[in-house]
Length: 169
Image 1 (tube, helix red, strand yellow):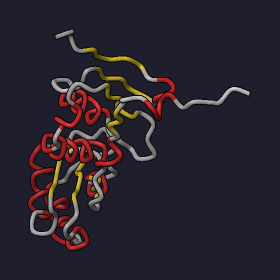
Image 2 (tube, helix red, strand yellow):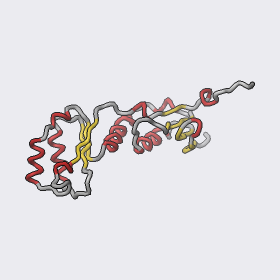
Image 3 (cartoon, one colour):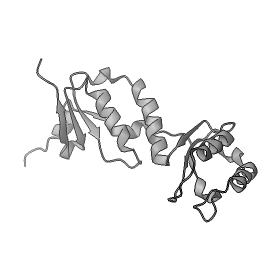
Image 4 (cartoon, rainbow, N blue to C red):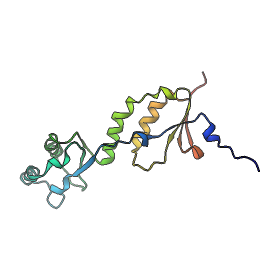
């Protein structure tokens, strides 16, 4: 019987796994529709009263995404007002969903990685993850890797999709 050789393990292929950089900070989201009449109509006086009486301290040191889950037309100042109530407690507030917040956190983190370790190497950006890595993170990672990598693939080593190959020097 012929010995099975793991060519992937023996290759120079480098795996860039965005899960390794997944933000571990506490993240929350606030849906503005909870303070709208029937989830759709913003009555300023009532809205301000809800915000005044809300327990903002529960967001202490958290990263918070502020959004509206309904099709309500919410004036811009409403999200800004919510943000000002959160500011004394939250570490960061963004307009959007948890996925948007994750993307923002990756956008802050990925530029500070030393990509030179991938110089002239074939790199695979690991695609299957157990954590919800946003597409914007994959796109940013590919851009950061491109100046260094010999080639970039996406997926798993057994079924990678080639994306980029550097020109021969």
